[in-house]
Image 1: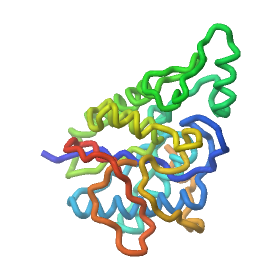
Image 2 (image 1 turned 120 degrees about the horizontal axis):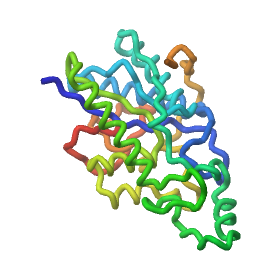
Image 3 (image 1 turned 90 degrees about the vertical axis):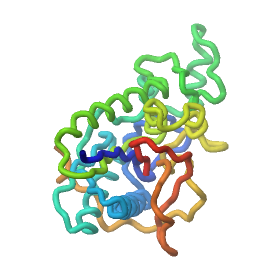
Image 4 (image 1 turned 180 degrees about the vertical axis):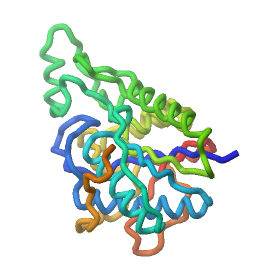
Length: 266
């Protein structure tokens, strides 16, 4: 029987306004983010080759621009690397980041003030952005755990749908948003729940931004725009098991616990 492994991939760095909360920011990738997506394509191709797997043609992604761009660049780069055509970014609403509903895209300090000033609510915990089960008291807001469950349920359904139709060992890519992917991995029992909460913590002195990969090891930031930018033709990170990149490579490595399960975050 053919094997199917889900690969969780976070979008590249985006143009994140300072202090703004949210896992669904409607902004494009930066030049560094474009380079990260191109580098991820090489890592993915290397991983597939090492495992003797193929990468599924449909690179499923959140509908937010940065995630779609990341998937589209992945497809363009994979076509060049593998000499195989037909990769495409496929938007899935279920892969969107954690919803903050009526307070989406406000600054974290503004959200905290709104909570504090409303006599119905108690003051938000200091680490509310990273708490798995805390739900800010506004319409349409998800908990991080709820976002992870939504995404994890979707991934599980897609795996079950695809498995009977496989024609060989396959890597199935899902491009989304850091905290939602982390909590989806916890929901699917790939990552311990307490570790998911740690990885979702905002960086010291800043808000929970989606502009850098979660749990990224120190590395130099790529500079210069990637020549292959996403185009409209395609519309209808966590542990790595790959070898270290060669000297001078721009690939970013990540550090989280290894898991034997068939969800492979890249």
